[in-house]
Length: 380
Picture 1 (cartoon, rainbow, N blue to C red):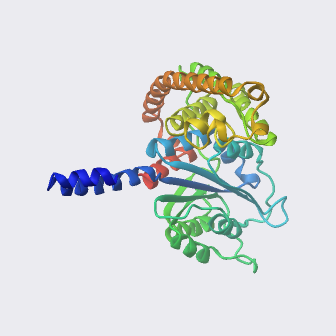
Picture 2: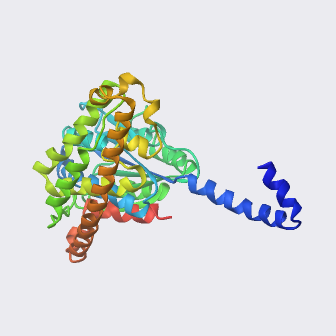
Picture 3: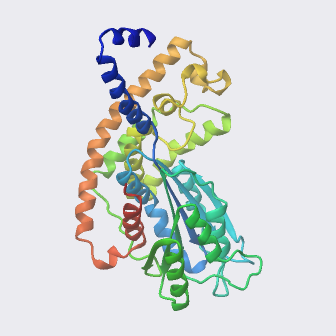
């Protein structure tokens, strides 16, 4: 470094020109390193009347996540969930914190059932308080923080222990958390509160049918081939880390097959999400625990992994053989993802064409409303 500067000064004015040019280049590089973050939390009423909407959310969570990727391809994407009912039910709130592990959120969503309720109001105030004040939101200005409150009944305003929603939403505004209010059904008392919540939360008031509307599930001619390719990509996963994490990663690689058997379009949505994320993170499954993704994205090196955290298959190999196996799976994944990207592009075009001719009733569905809102609120 000093040698170059000394030499530059021997050429008179050229050193000054180089110094001036270096500053914006360095600035540009540091800006490129900083990745944007998009965080989305769903605050979801899971009482008995919400059964239809809850099932629709299970079908479309991957499509919703993909809409975020489409608008923010280079962002870190974290999704969280706060399920709520009321005092006297099985639970008042059940919280799944914001995470990049969308497969984990999906698995937890599948376990939720619409039950309970009784009196009309629900514990909306507590659920919003948990979402705004208890979830681990990323700090900093280069992040989008978005909440979707989804329900059909107004809050209990008579619970003395609750923090009432106007106070919670004032905190949300300070933290740049946008709160949208999705009203299922046409209850006028709920509508008034939901409109107030959306206004105080700098979000949208979104009315949809009680059952969530006719959720748009579009099967395409490319789904089967997409699922087959994603299964092959899952075969390149090398689980590592503590045994519990390795087992969780193995479960995720099987998840695609389970979803494909029950809902091929949802499995294709999942594969599309993973393929688009792979351009940034090399993911084949979401979250930690895949050595191929961790090394390819620079989060780890093969030499830094403890011996006991390697899978049995790698532990039996020499260091050279381990590297060769990792390189082999990395290259295989890259090749398969490139092939999959072509199919995903065709599938996207097919789905977009079908959505254009969807009826107005379908356009007001839960998934369409959330996707449209996310595109508008996360656009940079």
